[in-house]
Length: 266
Ligand code: ATP
Ligand code: MG
Image 1 (cartoon, rainbow, N blue to C red):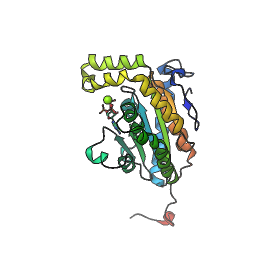
Image 2 (image 1 turned 90 degrees about the vertical axis):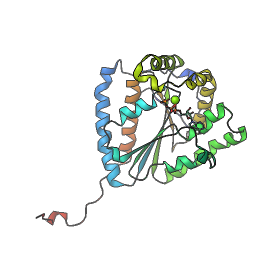
Image 3 (image 1 turned 90 degrees about the horizontal axis):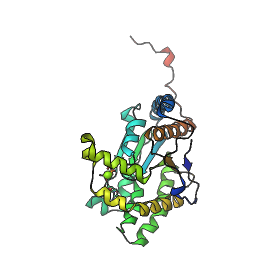
Image 4 (image 1 turned 120 degrees about the horizontal axis):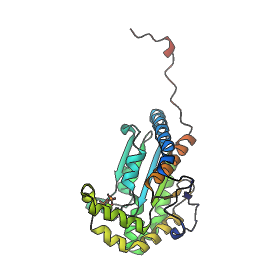
């Protein structure tokens, strides 16, 4: 798998990571069987995660506009029991949210034991868009990297396994996807003229991402840089990583109540 798992403190140059990579796979049909297998296995593991109620999994998704966060969630969660998953999309903070510290709204959405939580955007916006647009003074956003590490440590110490994925698309791929939103009637609702302004700030965003990767990829919550120009490869890589991570938790169904063998249902 050509996925980059960022090591603590590792400097990343996104220009050097190919967003179009598809690893050893040549095309979608080659990857299809593996993806279906992963989705099926994920459903089995989620069932045990839920039954055991001891661990939880937090999946953080970040990307540029049209990077494929929504599509990833749709694909990789297609097999799981909706009761055990909670997706939270973080938009521009409300007045109330802004009146609190930046992690206040995030912490409330952290997955309870037994649950899979998905963040569609996350607390990283507070060192990405906020930094690129100077929404708070530099001193304030600079302190956030450490706040984030401490916060994720708290979650990890409480049984939350954290997987962070950056969906890495090229600027050309973004252009195509934004153009498709303009051209295709069923995609038009997604077109936001504001995305074009953000696109102009592409290099600033890349730089902000690189800093976040360098500063916030501790071993208990590493960033994964996923080549995401090809949606099928992106889905495959992410599903693979989720299955691998859940397998490592050694999940087990709880012990049944004593004496069940003697129970007779009349
Ligand atoms: P889509 O890919 O469908 O466009 P989206 O995640 O971009 O989905 P939008 O409602 O278009 O959803 O955008 C959410 C906006 O909220 C983004 O521009 C994002 O940068 C912004 N946002 C999220 N968190 C913060 C934050 N903490 N401070 C400022 N802006 C934020
Ligand atoms: Mg958007």
